[in-house]
Length: 337
Image (cartoon, rainbow, N blue to C red):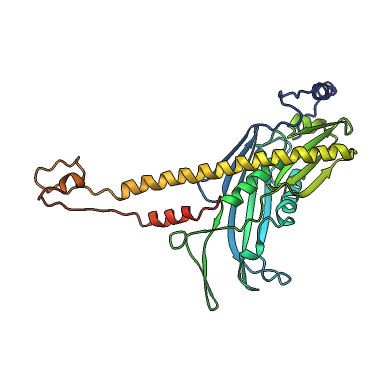
């Protein structure tokens, strides 16, 4: 099933509104839609909403054998799946052009820019390394799936923790989260994709296009920028020519918009840490309660133990300490912003 393309009148209306300085959704030419980033509850799980476009990313790791050409490097893989619920253009069981485009851009953005230290994923040289897989799933589409997928992948990688390992001779033991604190990935920098749609044969440029604007475009250009204002990758599709001054203007806008996205990403990581810390304090409060045994005379069971410590009456302590509490606290202390 295919979506009905916009009519000539709709395309003319979109172009005329952009020429007037205002878009159909009342944004400016270089304005982002509302960005929402949710992390957890599992480590390495991110839910990103860019306007009404929604992408979910999940990271998992497994121990594999390295390539003979790179015996000391692990793997960083990206897979993209576009759900038929996201748009009628996607069909179940068939690989769409959007899936191929998003996967290639993510690999170019993260792998070729060396954003993740793959040498740090080595366990035993030539024998065992970590393979980090990032599964990106498009849930709802209203344009600009590339940027939403990149933000979701970056958030999931920053939030992910792999199990710790111990190497004794030829034996490699992978510790569970109850035995050892999980280890964060070694992240050199965080690239963020910023996409512009090219309209009216290169005369108009808009940031973060919607589905309607994408149907009217004649090309697009994507910049991958990190927090150091470095260009990690540039990708252009479509046959529309783009003047040099327009390209430089887009690069400047992409720099500032990527910094805003980095701030939102760091805020979501901090909020996730605080929420998990509140859960730890709540678990501690329940674990260290010491109820009074009901066989102690006429003591009021609603009173705390400390209220009876000054008396000579005996009491029994029933301390129930969750063995995972201290492990969880140490894990939070190792959380890297």
